[in-house]
Length: 162
Image 1: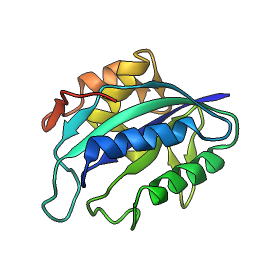
Image 2 (image 1 turned 30 degrees about the horizontal axis):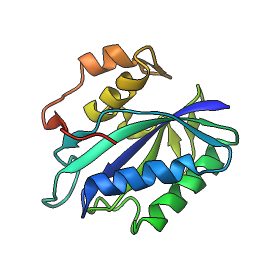
Image 3 (image 1 turned 90 degrees about the horizontal axis):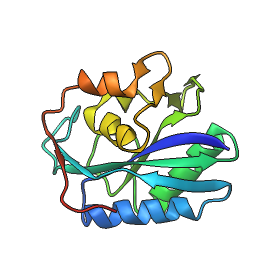
Image 4 (image 1 turned 60 degrees about the vertical axis):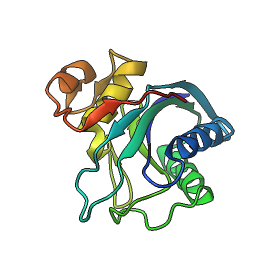
C-alpha cells in the first residue's frame, strides 16, 4: 500500500460535519485504509476572487492499494456525493479533497499534479506534520522545515477535532 496524504476542506454549511463525512467515506473506500487524521485548522480563504466564509481544513493519512489516478477518481466521487460542484473555480464549497502526496511519486498531468500545488500552505504542512513529522515533499524538502518557513497568518487551530 502506498502512503498518501489528503487535504480536506470545507467552507459552506456544517463545515465540521462535511469534513467528518468525507473522512468516513474515505474509510469505506476500496483498497483504502485511513491511518490518521490531523488536527482541524480554521483558515482564511486564499487565492479567491471574492469574499468567502473561512475554511475548516485537515489532513488525512491513508494507505492506498491502487494507482494515484484511481485515488483521484475516488476522491472526486466523495466530493460529488457530498454536494461539491464546480471543481477548480475558487468558489465556496461543501467539501474539497486534494491529494497532497502519494508516496514519493511526482505527477504532472493535465488533471492531477502531485505533490499538490497547495501543499506549501501552512495548514496543509501543519496537518502533515501532525501525522508524520518526518515526512518529505519530493522536490521541496522536509515538512518540518517547510512549515517553519510558511506563512501561518490566517491559520488557527480549531477547538473541535474529527
